[in-house]
Length: 248
Image (cartoon, rainbow, N blue to C red; front, side, top):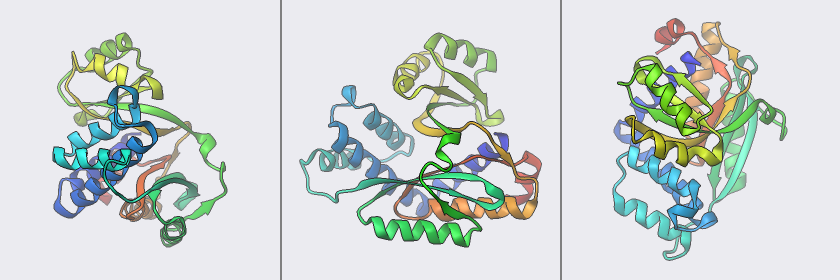
């Protein structure tokens, strides 16, 4: 999804700025806390916590913030108790969406997500309405430098499932969820890696060629990701690079 990945690049650029970076830190801290609470503080036995700490390192989060978040999760320090909530919905043009949240107030979060979807030209959907169109996968980012053949060869030998070119931004190596860290460990011996994460990959995508719908979709993604309780937003839209350049 070249256009969608271009949107991801814009998002990473925004996160490098002050206010956006603060929100990124908040989201990563929440994820570390919940991962430690659910699976313990031992990285060797908690793949989700390893992925969260990888994200913290990629965001250049201070180590003391990471340590404190882990201790809050394991109960060594007092902290807010968050629960996971996943919402399904539709965006402009019928784009399928999954919104992952961590919240201490389910009613507040539901209201915020519902309101943002409505403002952005979308709506909430019933549970299971769009989830069938997404697969849970691990993603390892490969930084620019290696050729596609080099990345593909390394990925095959590491046991990965797929390789997706991001053009000048490098590559994504996709794995089954439980294989994420084993594949990443094998790849880092041969390739320059970025973030590792669990995500939802759409089985079928919807191309947005109408500029108004594409613009509305991008604004909706921003609105949702700006919400305090939202961790990740996944959607099945594609936008051609030429149109994305105009909108950006």
